[in-house]
Image (tube, rainbow, N blue to C red; front, side, top):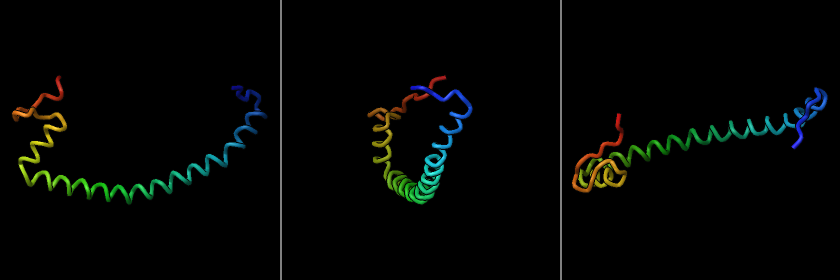
Length: 82
């Protein structure tokens, strides 16, 4: 793909991209506002899940085994080695 090398050609190429860039910025701003609201919902869901898991020791152990932090015998694994 050829790129513009002359200053006059570069200005025309950039002028054609200005509108899509501004439109993309507006879409990003709108998506950020939507994600902020959905982010609050996700945090509330995570807190509810944490409360449910923390309420029952057996469920907590099962979760730790599933994510690989604990063996099935109950021994904690070394996840980070220095």
